[in-house]
Length: 541
Image (cartoon, rainbow, N blue to C red; front, side):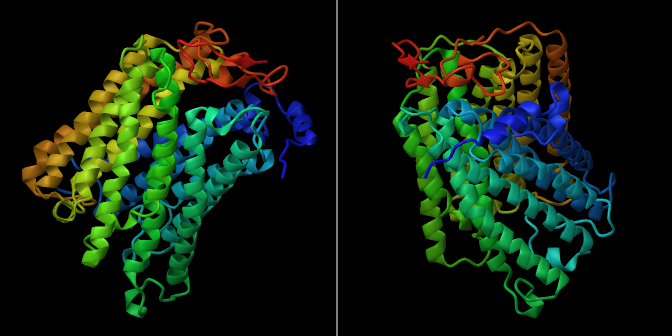
C-alpha cells in the first residue's frame, strides 16, 4: 500500500489565500493547520484560565461568597473540560504534530490533507458549543468526568450539549491520530529508517495509537450516558438497574491513557529541544523509543487505580497497583535520558531551555506523587482530596504546558523568521514557575489534611493555605502578559532569525524560515543523525 499526496491538493494549496487570511481558510497546508490549532487552543486556554481564576477567588475564603454553589460546579466542569480537550490535547498533538511531523519524515504534507483540515475545523464549533453549554438553563455541573448518577439527575440540557461537544472533539482526535500513524509509517522519505526518526515522531506514533484505541471507548460511553439522560434507559442509572461502576471503568479506560495522550507528545518535544540547546546528542535513543512503546502498552492497563475506593476487589487492587508501579520505570528512564543529555553539555540559558528544565523538575515531582497514589492505603487516605488535584496539575500543567511554552520559544523563529525577546521570555518563565509551584505545592498539604476537592466551601482551618494557592494562581495569570507582549512585539519588530538560528540538525531547520508551501525547494533532505552534535553527519540533499 502506497500513500501519496494528491497533485490536486498541491494545486489547491497554491490557490489558497496568502498572508494572515490563510489562517481563516480551509487550508490543506499542514503548517497552516498547525498554527490554526495553536492559536485556537491558546484562545481557549485564556478562557479556561479565566475560569481557573474564578475558582481560586472563590476558594480564597471558606464560605461560598463569590459565586453560588451550583455555579461553582458549572465553572469547575467547564474549566477542566476546556483545559484538557480544547487546550492541551489539540496543541501538543494537533499544533506541533501537524507542523513538525511532515518535516521529520521528509514529506510535503500529511497523508490525508483534507481529513487533516476537517480534524481542525471540528474544534472551533465544538469549543463554542461547550462554552455555550454554560449559558443554557441547566448547565453541566458533574465535573469533567460526568459521573452518573450526578450527570443524570442534575438539569440535563447543558449536560447533553457537553456530551455532544466532547464527542465531536473525540472525533477530531481520532481523525488526527489516523493521519499521524499513516504519515509516519507510509510517507517517510526513501532511505529514512524508523530508528532514524526524531523522537517526537515516536512520541506521536505512540500517542496516536492510544488515541485510536481508547477514544472510541469514551465516545461509546458518552452515547450510552446520553441515552440514560434523554431516553431514560438504564445503562448507568442505578434507579433503573444501571451500574455506575461500569461507567467508571469505561470512562477511565480512556481517561487514564488521556494523561499519556497529553504527556507523551511533551516527552517528544522536550527530547527535540534539549539536544539543540545543550549541543549534545540525545542520550539513549533506543531506550527512549522502547520506553515510549512501554508506556503505550502499560497505559492501557492501569485505569482502575482511579477506582480503589469504588468497591474494587483485593485482587484487582493488587494488579493495578503493580501495573502502575511498572509504568514508572519507562517514565524514569526518560528522566535519566534527559539529565544525561544535559550533563556536560554546552547549555544555552534561554527561554526554551528554562521551560524545558522547569518541566523536568515539575514532572519528576508529579511522578513521585503518582507512585504514592498507586499504593492502595495511601490512595484511600487522599482519594478525592486536593492531593490528587496537586498531583494532576503537576503532570498536565507543570509538565505539558511548560513544554508548550518551551516549544513556542524554540520554533517561533521557524514559523515567523523572527526571534522572541529573551528578556521577556525569562520574565515569563520566572513568574510562571514561581506562581505554579506557589499555587499547587501547598495543595498537597491540603489533601493530606483532608480537604476534599470539587467543593466551594471548606473548613476554615484551610483558609490561609488556600490564600497562598490563590496568590500563586494570580501570578500564573499575570505571567500571560509578558508572553503575549513578547509574541506581538516579536512579530512586529523582532530581530530576523535567519533560517537556522539554533544551528539545529533536525530536518525542519534545513529549509528557509518561514518554509515554502511545499516545505523544501528541491528534494527533502535525508537526515540520518538528527542528534549528531559533536560527530560527523551524513546528510544527503
